[in-house]
Figure 1 (cartoon, rainbow over the protein chains, first blue to last red):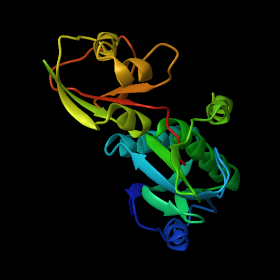
Figure 2: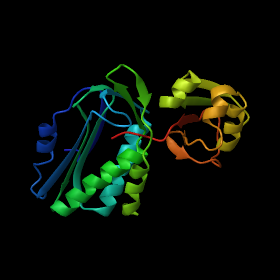
Figure 3: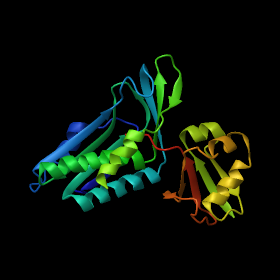
Figure 4: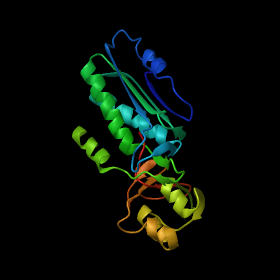
Length: 152
Length: 83
């Protein structure tokens, strides 16, 4: 099994199947997952959907680099990052991060690290589509930039 | 020399194009930006001083001093907002 997986896709993913796939290594006692979903408010209220764009090629490279960096800090046995692009309706999953480690502390920390860096280094852009049909690009958040500071 | 330019998200909308082949004498990212700003309109506004954007050369983040070579893929895009 390839331990490090990165996928960018328009379709849904099966969270349970992805967790199961990383739960079959007898050396891994801890598997942590994070799911990010489309929420009904963001930069504005009444968000009905998101439209996600990315930079094909650079996105995959950036995600692999982030996993490599996590692997240098923790005993990361396996990791999966799946990120969706295109039109995503309210409540739909956007992103999945799964980490598998010997112990839970590493698995929790690595999952947080992957998400923090994904949000600041991977070339994805969100557009919010509101209930009234209007749309706007989401602004980058200072809080996301600040979040990576704690890993330095 | 020729550069393959790509633009994303808000900048793609503002510029009205997602990609173009650009004939240029610019040898660095900073020189390229000067040239693009000279187009005026949304180019001057979006790439103006005080605006925040990122430049990638051959899919790696680049700075103002990054050198450009014939055939490079140069991307300009807003700060990322995935996850």
